[in-house]
Image 1 (spheres, rainbow, N blue to C red):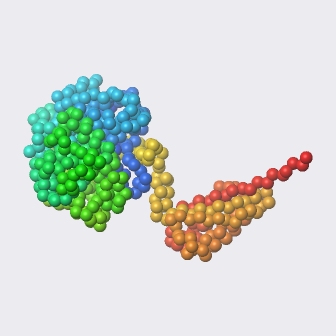
Image 2: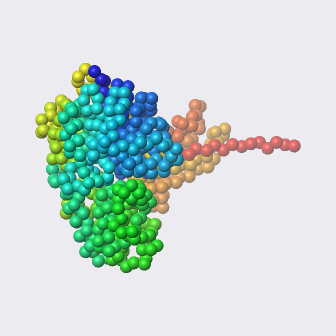
Image 3: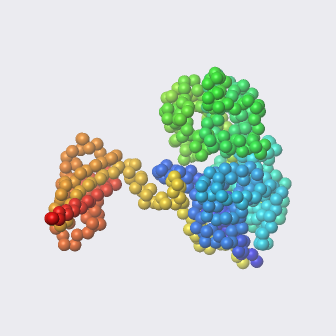
Length: 560
């Protein structure tokens, strides 16, 4: 009997950052290697990636990384992974090209080149498992699910998927292959839970294409379309509609241009006419009703770019009176407030906002009915909902129970949980390190909870700096405390508070100078403690207190 372990290092109880480890005997298979964009409390953080510690400790056993599609939640952490570990990476042609863009943009990983292109017909034999793939429907071409065939049965990972009966050939699900895998026998199913709470029927892409065309065709002014750069299905619909409405398309941002050029090179995206795209400089030659601006924003996220356009901070564009801002991405629950604020800013700037989600339920992820259909296709012995917040995983577990699965065979895991299949049974077998690794500029993982806590305090209550110069030999204060405050109180209207703080600091310093066991650390901590209590009593705020103690030294002049 084979020993099998399944370990989610990301993608559970969170949105994005998908990375799932499947161990079959002594071989490790890595399914996806994604990132997630930071939530509001992660101040200053660019992106968050999984913790690779477990994989680094077992690097000699990693057979490869297998990618389901080309979105950031599946490939975004790859540069950081391959900069540490030289293992083969497998994916479809488009997924690999997009992964290469990401890997080559990182100085630490750009030398990596062990990429292998697969398709839905590929089977890769390893010592203890055979890896194969099946076509799925998502918002990007060449999206696939992954099947690991073992002696104990198939282990299936769906990746991001939905079912759309009217999907065009490039996006069609291979239903026959799903049925075939299910008939072979599925030991464990790892399935997308992002839309598990919704029972609303998702609009077909044909319906969405008609809606996009109607919106673009009948607006008389300039149109700014906000779209996620890697949602190539939506981008294609926008290009098609622009061509039919006799509009030229302006691409803003390097991300969208690189992705579109890559997809065009592989014939996964088509320009309806050769002269459809124009540059920002060429845009001036056309009237507003002849222009459509496709805005994707930094890292493919368009909402913040729209804010910059609205407040005049964008490097090349600003929203003008009569502009239609057409938001073709569906915000997550966490982003709804941000989108609402953005909408208000656009109206203040003179624009008009329309969201594609106003008329349709738009999603690239399976709803409750689709998820149950996948469960019925696979009929797994064990079920592990992945890709979603806890409530979405729990909703997916309930859906599995409704189609006949016992709750004891459903595992809602946390990051780092180890599920082990041994002696014919699946059970929890401990956990491993799986923290969030935060990327801030060039720093990878050097930002921890203490730094984030200080950033949060600074953002809320500011900083209070006290500088004192002392002479330890003479046991006196050479220079009275100089106090500087930023983001705490308005100094000019708080002179009494500052005087009292200065006196308190002087008293503390003098007390320590008179002590026989003077220690710098104790002095600074005493200032922080006493001053912190006083400031909270007076203001109900807790600023970061930074005492700076300098020592004056006197050198005797030598006499000649």
